[in-house]
Image 1 (cartoon, helix red, strand yellow):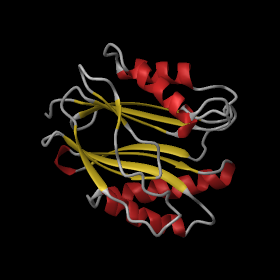
Image 2: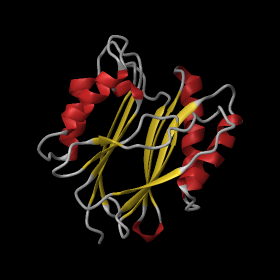
Image 3: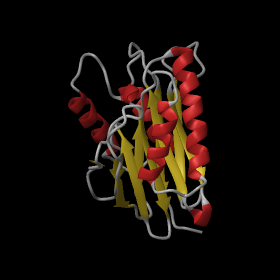
Image 4: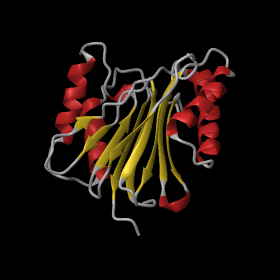
Length: 217
């Protein structure tokens, strides 16, 4: 539990013998009960991807403390990525403000988060997709979405949904259907999504982060 949010997460490396890959997530406590949520995916695998991930994760944590607009933070992170040897990464960065009951989100070429609200069907958030970090030349933008107490945001990397046998839209629809049901504890939802969607032959890491808005203290 952090300021105004209940969170649950999972990380599953592509190989059982691996401890870390190119995917990462973080929950960063900020001032005024705000919370930064980040999920990212460095393209590639092995030690090189893991090393790039570590540097980007450290940079994100440092920049988050400056309370920058999400788009501005991604601009700084873009410059960090440009300094890494041939690295490209996707990333979603969000800042939750429990007092305003809002979340500001910027996307760098990543799959869109999902918002789950009581009495409504889960929805893929319509965010400007942006380009991956390391590509450059395209500005990022910040989108503000409402997040009332009880609402949930689901962040994930492509290893959860992408396969060689199914279209991505079909897999995203399956993810939305799994989230469209009775309210469950977040830990159970994480287990359900991994158990149902992640295929063992999919040689990709999975990072999953779910956040539920609570009443601010």
